[in-house]
Length: 276
Image 1 (cartoon, helix red, strand yellow):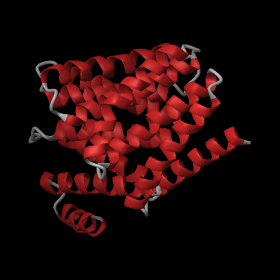
Image 2 (cartoon, one colour):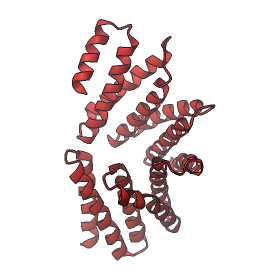
Image 3 (tube, helix red, strand yellow):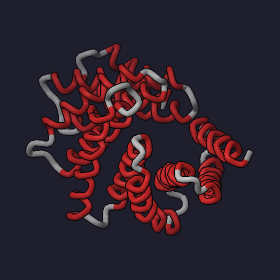
Image 4 (cartoon, helix red, strand yellow):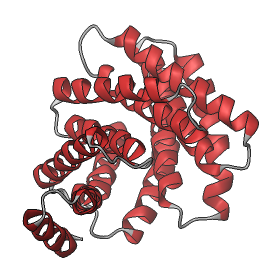
């Protein structure tokens, strides 16, 4: 991808009026950012995704946009916001995701199911960022609930589309985290159990589908924290041990992923803290 981006960039430099070259560079740098974030190259990834956002925004405003430019821009904005959150740049993350949310909300009028899915992804991501900011708990709750409502509606019409189930489970885990913070442990447990039941069949049938297993890790981690909050220490240890087992499977499949290794180390540290 890096070499392809260099070539396309050189072509665009030679012919700056060729929007096809700019589109190619944007897509390549967006893909490169996805790889770099897994390798822990946060600054490089953020720079590449920011370039993709700027390029795609320029293409949409050009005389010759194509239908895929808007969905690609929404995806890039969503990824940019998530990368900024990972880097601890929460206000910037909020600004980027609010921009994405506004655009997706406009695009959903007369849009497709893919547009609704994009809005739900952005709403969830925005809710997760807002949850980390002071005095934003209510807004975080609203955005996550909106994402859940969209995916629940999509699943009613298209129950066979597995990734809707995965994203809904991720949203339920995020919702449970907010419930735990507010002391609503019983409700959190219900959401986490719903999420677990959505994920486990797919993980068992398709163990190499890392994205589903990764969300299941988050669900099990949330279940452990809910158990610990109500004094069920043995159950908390069991859930964390399950999460660690799944995370070890992920690291075996993605040995170069710095993010996966860091997540595994955090889970091990959390279990050790309980056992001490």
